[in-house]
Image: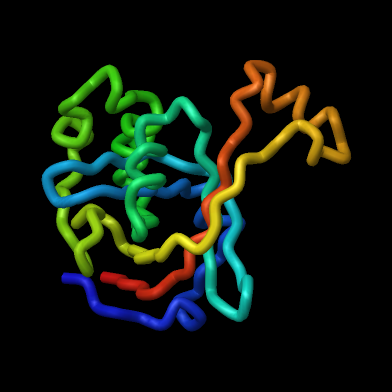
Length: 167
């Protein structure tokens, strides 16, 4: 059972949580949602609000849900669910309409936003800003060359963390 917590006191280490443990970003409605694995993004304070900023490539199926919805969830998992995160990151809802059923996680709704029961930390976020990364923005051109060979630049979503839940 989830209980609301204060994200500023939850021991949230973005370098570990985002870069090493990964997370699922999820958006949609109860019977019409998708989630994908992310391992790139930022967390911190923006515009005097606690925020998280995941980045999504344009071809990802989850992007259409993020673009459509005002709220999204970001959820983190114990190590025993790493295979489910790997599955969600390597299978597309475009190609696999029943991806969410096959991933082995149990969908639930928190505050009207889809997420998964197996998570140990869920952030409910309200979209504040989106921006496509563009080649002209890269000061270090090697970053773009190494990460965007197909010119599929990420879109950044800055979301205010409106609630945090932990087990």
